[in-house]
Length: 331
Image (cartoon, rainbow, N blue to C red; front, side, top):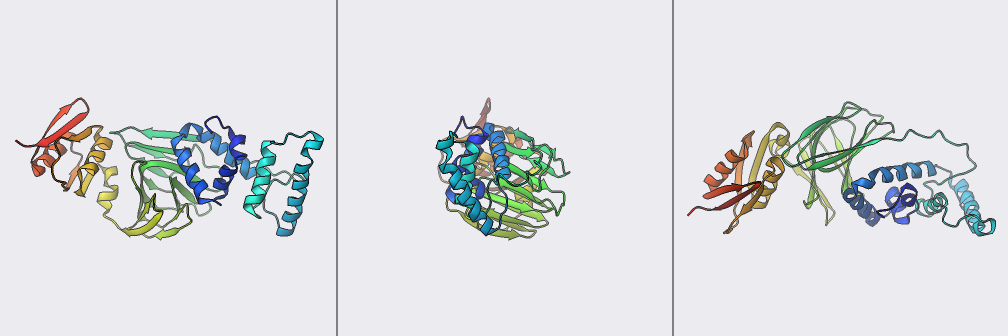
């Protein structure tokens, strides 16, 4: 797959199942593969555009007639010397089998005007940095540290779609004619105009979407759906495919965009991950004893101020060597 080009993706049966959302396992596989191969995203988008062109809507009777016609054409291919694995022909035939009426390439119809191709931008933030982006529709995105966003340079289709790995705060420009989709690994958030926070770091078992203004609808790969109103948060458990909602503390969830760092009964692992993302330091607890939890709020403090406060509370000392912080119990 690493060598696939757009037409190879379009001719792959599993990719077509992902495109049609007809097989949850294929959807999960390809969403993970795309996330781990960002260098192939342009080819994936081109393949989806090709499949869009191959897809039209037909009445059921006309569809059956065209299925028979296409099958006959495929059967005759060796006779007339047509290559058996012509990519668009394979894609069309698989689409017919999978979609059962969703549509396929109809060669004798009047050609449609080809839609403009979206040019995608990929932007990543390292540990210790966050940034604010303005999209072509006026929507703004604050991208947290250690996060990546993929978005069109200009929204030209009927759906405004972006892809996120990590965490971001969205303020979406209202456009009832163009829904806005945020795709993460396993969960899609659909909005018209709203403000919300999405946290979907790859190393975490859960994805969370917290709504501050407006209204959003979420859907996972098994087509489970939830609607949120302001003050509600959806939490999606990746491996168990569980989607639930609860209330949330807005400062704890989205305060990071304004320089807040909030811990509530946080264990060491949670604190270490946060300090690495925000400040770029690896945190190591030497000779750990009993599990401990920490609650505290910081606002624009530097890493030493945060460490001194935590260490005072937990009776620890610390030392810093290059980009690594060592914690140990007081003697």
